[in-house]
Structures are given as structure tokens and as C-alpha cells.
Amino acid sequence: MTSRIDVSFIIPHKGREALLNATVASIAKQDYDLTRVEVIIVSQNEIPFDHSAYTTLLPNIHVVTCSETLNISMLRNRGVEDAVGQHLAFLDADVALATNWLSSMLSLLKSSQERRLVSAMQTCEQAAPPLEIIRTSLSNAVIDASVRFLPGRNLFLHRDTFAAVKGFPEHLTTCEDYYFTDKVHALGELFYTAQSSYVHLGEDKHYDEMFKKEIWRGQSNLASLRGRNIPLEEYPSFLVPIWLFGWFIIGLVALASGAWLVSATAIAAVVLPILIYTQRLNRLCAGKVHYANVLKFYLVYFPARIIGTLGGLVKPIKA
Image (cartoon, rainbow, N blue to C red; front, side, top):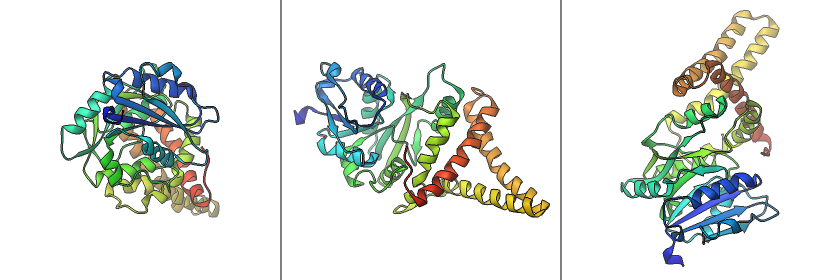
């Protein structure tokens, strides 16, 4: 069987079984010979995922059960241990792939000797709420181009590339995908394409859930800096939350002490970056959502990231 497998899909999984079902169903609809594909679900569920409904279409599907103490990098690396395909497709357990995803990823990866990793663009359904549209627009800021980082929701690469960067960073709870793809970028091109797409079924749809998730996502911000060269364009993502927090504290102290000029300066130092970010993202949204929703996004995003970044220095934050 080993020689027949071209691609190994590796899907870390915990809870939300309906979303995993949708993910596997989208793999089963690929316009590709599915006998040459394997699907490895690395699950932390107490009750194993029942994949019997897919065995006819996906004859090479199985579940690996792992401890709840493992992080997502460990789950992905564990999946690779069982994988036999020469190409690895890493998916989150809450995405629905377009039917041409696999054929497009293979074609694009093979079309350039410099290309080391490819990923499809994110789309959302027509009835998506404003926050999901904002998130999708942000993901698609640059399309059909080489990029520096990619989120881990859909990544496709040769297993030799995976081995060269020694897998996903198991010391990180979050930000592992940016760390991993940055390592791959040092070897060659990362390509983000519009030739295929996926829907992120688990995308943030409400600002309160986004706030909680961003706190969790931000906990490894600083830890992810260790062990790699930081490009100039990445610095704002780390420095702006610290800038905002610092000026916010200065503003409160100045206001309490009656230093009005300092207080006004601090307010301006907080408001200006938020407005700059909002204006940029509003252009990316191209009128699909109201400006107020975009502004609200950053008014939620930055405080959550500050809490997560600082909280992650003290103790791990649970999702």
C-alpha cells in the first residue's frame, strides 16, 4: 500500500465532531484518485471519531488517539510518524476544501523548483456575518503571490521539506504555524493561491468569541520570536500591542495626576495606530462590511492580544 499513497492528510482534532465530519467529507469530494490518498485524524477525543461512513470513498482513513496534554504541533508531528505519502497536507479540523484543492496544490508545488509550500485562499459563504468577512479579507490581503507566513488551516508540502525544518515547534502552544512556515520560507517559496479555496467553518463569527480566542492565540507571541530571524514587516504585530498598552497606562496615570497634555498625547498615541490599521483593513474589505465593524474588530483584537501576550508570560492559557 505504501507505494500507492501520494498524499497524506493530517488533521489534529479535539471536539466539534460535526466540523470534522465536514472536513473529511470535503476530502472525499476531491477530484483525485482517492485510493492514492490517506487521511490520518490525530484525535484527543475520549470517544474515537467514527469514520465508517467514509471508508468506501476513503479506503485509507484511520484515527490515532492521543493524550489531551499534547499541543497542536505535537499532534501534527505524531500524524507524520504514521504517514506514508510523499506529500503532506495539514488541515485544521474545521475547514471545507474546494473539490480541486488537492489537484491544484500538487500542480502548484511541482510547477516551481523554488516552491516549498502552497496554500489555498480563504472564502466565506454569502450569508457570512461581518466578522467572518473581515477575517477572510484579512487572510486574503495578498493572493497569487509569495508570502512570508501562512496560517496552518491548509498547508501542502513535500515530506522532505517537513523533515528539513524538523517538523512543527512543540515548544509553542500557539503561533506554531507562523513559526513553522517561517522555517520553510528559509528553504524556498511559500505560495498563497486563488486557484483553489477553502471555507473556514470554525471562523470567528461573533466578537465575544473572538475576544476569548485572541487571548489564547496571543500567549505564544513572544515565545515564537526565539530561534528565528524576525523580518522587519513582522515587528508591528508584536510591537503595536505593547505600544498601545504602554501609552494607555501612561494616559491613565497622566489623567489621574492632572497632566492634561501628556494625557492627550497618550490618547493620540493609542488612537492613531488603531485608525491606521482600521483604514487599511477597510480597504481590503472593499465595502463588504461597514467601517464601524472594522473599527470594532481592532477595538476587540488589540486588548485581547495584549492580555494574551502578557498572560502567556505568566502561565499557559487554555483555549
